[in-house]
Amino acid sequence: MKFASAFAGFLATRHENGGTQTSRAVDRLMRPADSQRELDPLLIWPAAGLLLIGLVMVYSSSIAIAEGSRFTGHQSHYFLLRHAMFLAVGVGAGLAAFQLSMRQWQGLAPWLFLVGLLLLIVVLIPGVGREVNGAQRWLPLGPLNLQPSELMKLFVALYAADYTVRKLPDMGSFRRGFLPMAAMILLVGFLLLGEPDFGAFVVITAIAFGVLFLGGINVRVFALLALVAVIGFMLLIWLSPYRRDRIFGFMDPWQDAFGKGYQLSHALIAFGRGEWFGVGLGASVEKLFYLPEAHTDFLLAVIAEELGFAGVLTVIALFAILIHRALVLGREAVKLERYFSGLVAMGIGLWFGVQSFINMGVNMGLLPTKGLTLPLMSFGGSGIVANCLALAILLRVDWEVRQLKRGTAA
Image 1: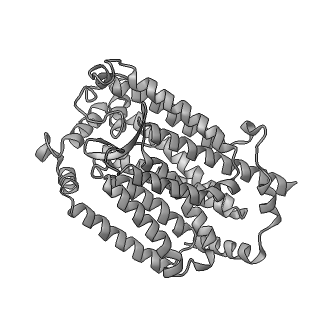
Image 2: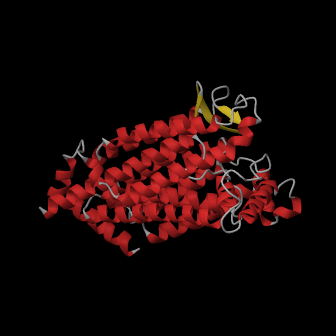
Image 3: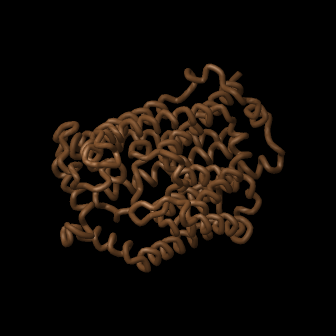
């Protein structure tokens, strides 16, 4: 909370003084030159490691389902090729996104949020959105499918940061500071629950209100928000039969191991088989049509079975390094009065942290099934592209912070 108060003080000073010479200097940084030697390895290498491990494990976990499906043409490498293509598109989009300054991203933030809302509306139109397993979350674009909720996570991180910076004088007010943002998130939540995509709603809520908290929102307002959110989520679960079934299956998966507890019981079996160092890459039994969604929601369970505790610990360590660095980078940007950049970096860190924590918790039986993928690793085109864009923005924040420090030192 001390950090939030200090941040609010920084913003107030900027609002009164009309900006600083250092902020104007960074505004001139539009196209970085020779940036490869000026980027943080604690951002690049953990992210690259997660992306590459994900590529290998998606292939390993999807071979059986790809060979046994008519949809894939019985090609064992079907998901590998598509995931590699998604990675290539994500990296290309990331390189383009890196060329935009954070000042430009701030200007685009409200418009991107509006685009995200429109996409969430379009996906719910009968005959337009594609339905899979009872959920209408995808927009068919020829051979590819776009999942707007994945892009919305990034758009909300940008919008919440921009909103906080613009609303500094009103952050202590419930009506002027909190309610407008709450109304926007409730609208997003209403659209997501219509798909339904409860997991994405949880992550987006965490991103938005986490950024507001870091931006100095009134503590009593935030405490009230937390209480209302907990009650609201409990009601959403209780009033939805299939969500209730997930909770009951989570509480005792072995009671109905072939029904409500099927996914969780097989995920736990995969973890148990893996022991310390796994059964070997490619040797998983659970991926042989026992564990549903092995290459998406339950990728970590296959990692646990094939690579063991050592493999799971490696994945957790890489996520921990990346998320910690994103939060530290955000704090450094705030100290240099780059408030939007700092909040975006911390928002992206919250996004990766919350989503990976939920996915890992579900795979380990610590949380009820949510239908969330593992960021940077699980199969999914929209998710991978959105993750790569977020990484590019983090690298852009890091690059601008380094340039600003260099200019200040000079």
